Image (cartoon, rainbow, N blue to C red):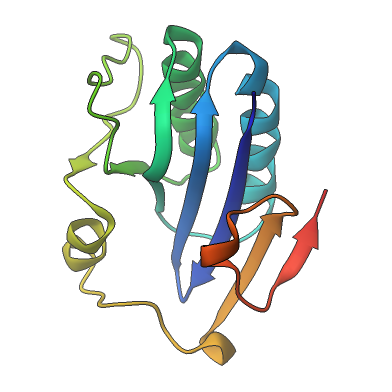
Length: 141
């Protein structure tokens, strides 16, 4: 089992939403999504885990590695809606990773409300992104 993802840029805030199970089989795909994020946009990134069913220890390590990659690019990572089955415990050398109870709280922390109209944002997603979340976007395999 793997994950699907959607990356949205709204002004200077990136939102990487992940759906599925972030286990050992999904770590590489998640790393690819983070590479996509690093290559596009500027500013902080909120990792929206609302649609993530669960994560493994390897998945949690992938998130801390994402925080390092983004920090190396001069960007920060924040989490929204971590799975109920545990909390993220990053290694001591990992950048701080603020955690928000949900995406609305993360957006509010940046002075944002609900998503902007489509003409004010860019969006990319995997083909498997859950149907109820689909919007007009650029798809990636």
